[in-house]
Length: 405
Ligand SMILES: Cc1ncc(COP(=O)(O)O)c(C=O)c1O
Image 1: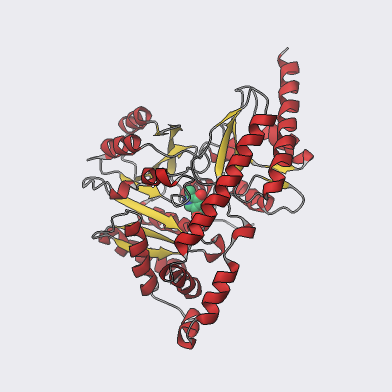
Image 2: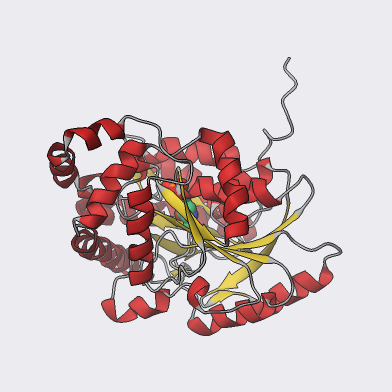
């Protein structure tokens, strides 16, 4: 037997492994994967970009690069962020291998075993795996339709005997809850953290994927609110706007935090793939991103509308859900006596897969929800998938009534 280190210990890791398999399972209708749609990737544009690169840049693609990132990409990313209204100011950008690596780097930089991290409940399961493998003590705060529960956050901070290392939140088009924080809630959150010394990690993987142009302003990042006495580390990703196969993300932070983060990254993988950074940089500088995002917003919005329509048609009255304004996810609520894990078994037997609510609970218990991801769904399968899922839910509800009576 080997003696594994404490780091290889996460209750959510098995969930993630299962999720990645199920999401790409061939014979199931899958609402599981929080991933972009295979049929929407800009394959021809990327072909064209690579083929048109000068020979010396093509050669550079194959080479190592600076740990902090390919300098032209750092520059174009700065313009992209400023166009989005994210104030870069004195902050520095570190390019990472996916934004999950940024979350890992931040965790390695600040968290020792037993340290406290605050999260939302529910919370992005990839981040939970990072925090658990670091041996952190996770304390979660519920969210409602407008964002994190401010009173619960205040009470939590007051009740702790040690200062949490950071609060990790996903304010725009939350994974899995699909909500966006209201501007008031973002402000209130900053007020609570103000002066506490608790760092805010603002994960903004989905903000470009709003469905209504008129609501773009609601995606404004807390990093750009100009608050001086809250340290904010902002993370972003190319995964949802270009493709997760690029494994490209970034973090924006103060220089002091950047310096340490760069050292951590050096020990992890020395640098992010130059190949991917060069292609992504060309995509940005040739002004291909915005038109592509317009196309994606329409496609995802169509899928969201279809899902809403069929949920209304087929779901029993006991089931409720939100209508997301952007992103990939709809979060269904079950009656309190039914567990999403029971529905999962019934639904998979009938050919439809989704992600159970407990997957996103840091304590791996709360199971009265299920996440439907509409992003990687062929439009013509959504109705069939919802119909099968609703039959599975009705079956479980019926059985649970028999048990109660
Ligand atoms: C909220 C959130 N943050 C970060 C990520 C990770 O993205 P990346 O592919 O950039 O590592 C995801 C991916 O699903 C996500 O949902």
